[in-house]
Image (cartoon, rainbow, N blue to C red):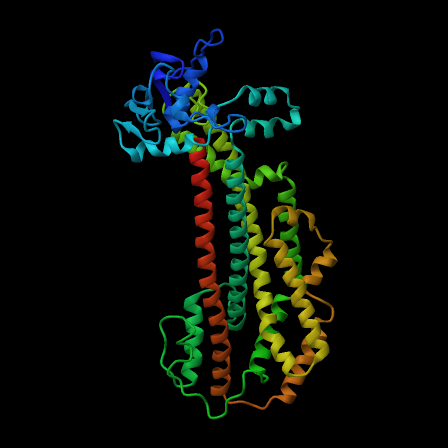
Length: 487
């Protein structure tokens, strides 16, 4: 907001004065006692209903009603009037505040329009004391940023912004974790169904093929409540903890396909390409701030309404300023494209790992039921190694950059020399200990496991949606705060 006109009547040391400022800078000079401070006090009073120099340490019990009016006047005759032009509106808005009722003001506009600006003025950024200015001038270069924050009364703003950033980062981290869980549960289903990527139509087709074996009708939608709905269980039902040879056979087949040297070589090359692409970034911090900077510059471009910078209010040629911001946006968009490329590469690797991890998740409980302790421990360790690699890929780009593995180490995440022997032992014991089941029983058991996975996925999706809502709200609050802070 810009001050265009200021009028004082019976205020402090001034009987009456009218200043036409027209939104420009104003310098007041003169000898002591000529009323310079009264002009500053008048602006302070007009905006806040108070005079900050008359409050605080060392002022004693000074009361505004006694020291605000001119010495020869009373509060009923003391008032200050100002005309302002608000951002985006060329119509002058008049504000009057009277000493006999300083908490209220009069205006030719609406209180809803004026209140946000007056509430902002209460932060005191429009008032600087000699001491504050001297402290800034004499401070060391290292303290300049801190002193500037104190000078502009921005400590509270900085603290609030810090809270918003912390909350936004926490919710973004929570969302990333929930998204990872969601992808893992999808991997469990993909592994069970035998598909490379999550596809509802293929899963429904898989469900209907097994429902048909149990003489069930087809379903047309997918959720955990109808996977086994209206089905009559076979006469002999195995408990959820019993060994299911068909699951073991299916998962061993999937692992044999997924955990190959050829697949490991491909993922190793993809991971190295990802690390190398991240290493090409000279400024990781700036890279991570890409989205915020893009929003910032785009906002600035939309706020250009005159020949003044929308951020610092300095005069610029509007065409030159617009061109400058467009160049900044173009530069940041290059970073953004780089970020999207990195995310795409990491997602491709993660999809393979989620599938592999899903097969292990389905197999491990079955191996435990076979009482194969050594093989069970091996598979659990393998799953934990894959989880470590997944966690790295889901992390900050700086974490990925620090985790460049030699080829043999990387391959241990995906395949081990004991794998074939372990698979053969599990397959052999499974065929010995498990009775032959009917096709109906096998289909029922498969649908039972799928129902568990579907329930996990649905619960995960609910948690993911809630987390995404919180993340978006936190980001919206931070963006709104940043926008209003610059107004």
